[in-house]
Length: 439
Image (cartoon, rainbow, N blue to C red; front, side, top):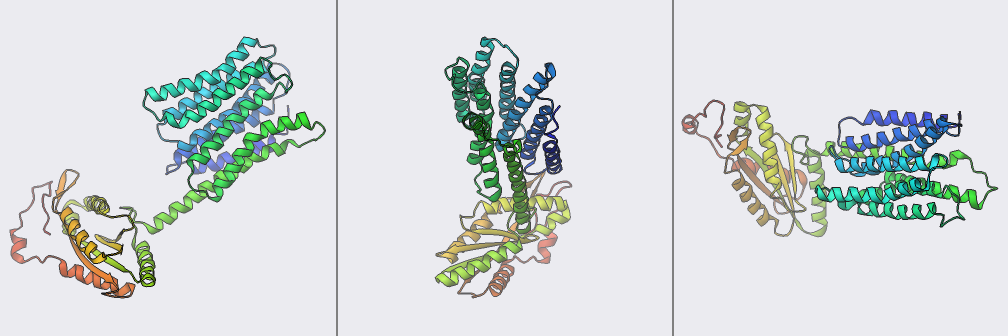
């Protein structure tokens, strides 16, 4: 029994604990769960390697598990790039290739295994990916993202068939095993680079780690063949694993930082920019307009009749109404326009560019038109209106605070007035349904 993998076992164990602590509910829960399972496979790899090299059946089984678990981890890492709740396509690829890898390593590890089994195991790397690709197309899944992966495994299958038949007799017999270990990690690297759009520090570290991990097996084999007198410590070949681990942790931290920044600048109910985001945006927009001698329009929006929705149907209906209104208002925004919820039932819109006053007046009329029809909220319908006040920089004001004040004042002047006769004549809705609200 070898004790050399114990430090690696301990380090990977701590990493698994770290992923367990962050794999709960959240936007990245499926990604972190795939990563977690992948690192558990790497832990199994190190655990089995403590028995690898022993004589008899125990050593053979340990060798098979050591090699298989290493590829299983790569497959989970690869499928984590597009992990979803019910991603049966990814799971099919994982299990299909896990079984194929295990069968191949069995034929490579068991002494005096027949040539036919070697050839059959090598051919499976062509049959299984093609069959899974066909299955994805038949079931209407996104098989297009797997085409290149299938081509890689088919090419590897052809290589394994040639090496098995002895076409590359001058190369070490273990080159086939190294190829089977290399391809999953190389595919993982390629999928990671293709699916990650943001080139952050975590991305760079993870990408370099995956690439060097994929090259370790071939480079290690060639080093032993070409430089037999050069002794390289085994832990050097394990460094890419920990580079990937550091990169993944950085990615999770970057995601959490981005999420916290988003929450700090956006309204939690409607996901619109909040007051802080709005004020920062307007301040920068005014500076830009002042520097370019251009114009900027500010629209102050306040919902009419919203308090009656809260009073009659409750705050849950009020929240649903705000979410519905936010979706409607957002649908009328152009690229570059900012719609923000600054509190309660108050919204602001910022327009930049040419003819902003004309655009603001057209947008105000459009938003009023949107709320002419009752909004369905669950089993009820609510009638809301919107009052709009418009202020333009620099005609109405040349600074942020007075511009907002003017827009608010004009919004309040635009609000409809309710007389006592209107309130008395207002029909009461039937119990359990709100068909109209005084605007």
